Length: 273
Image 1 (tube, rainbow, N blue to C red):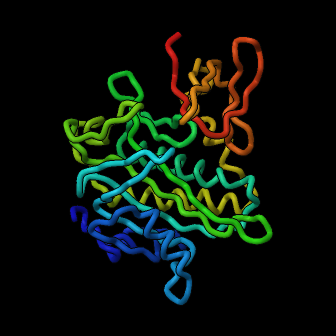
Image 2 (cartoon, rainbow, N blue to C red):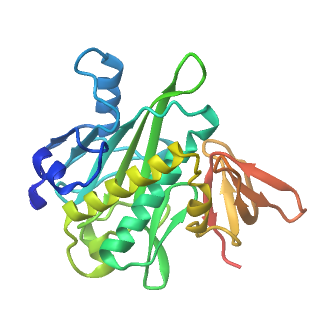
Image 3 (spheres, one colour):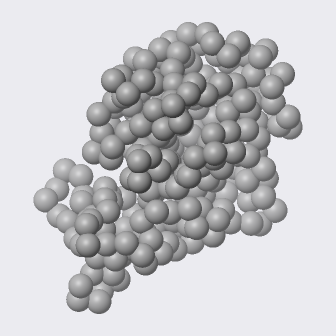
């Protein structure tokens, strides 16, 4: 693997206290989320600890939101899943998606100088040739304890790093990679380290009572814009202006009649004025 992607190289590159200090790097898997979920459910002495990170160079069956595929050529991207044991109230579950997408946006901007935003709820976007393109997606899965609090949460992320233009996956939102956006290869290991360090900082801030929602909302490119909201597997849709988000990260869209809709899960695309 390029960038010396081994568990030892990763841990040596990190200045984190707990996130990624236990990790495993595999050449290829079906899905990092599925494999890590399997390990967690098996339990026992081999159960991964909180902060465990599973990385791969290639996913045969990578997944995004709404059961969509997420494809990336071998050795081209950052493909990983992180295990958290937050014991937060159920209504804070989306906070992990918020802080992970925020950390990715900040790390990408820091490492590349690109203008980076977030398309609700969790697509990390870079501005390329005057338009927003998707460079990263996130998939979160978890389970609850008997008291209704989060028992464990796995957050998977794929960041298109060094994918050439002609190898980019297809998507409803135009895709790109950091190579395509900057015109030069971006070292993966420094980007990974910057990302994991920022995730840990934001996660620890939640432990101190600080919600990631205000900072995450400031990065949203949808707000104040006319949007089309489409619900998968149905013919339902609505149009309106994205006005903001609530504390749980749900999108607030006001339609032409003045009614405010709370969007919990849907496809949201920007409309032309």
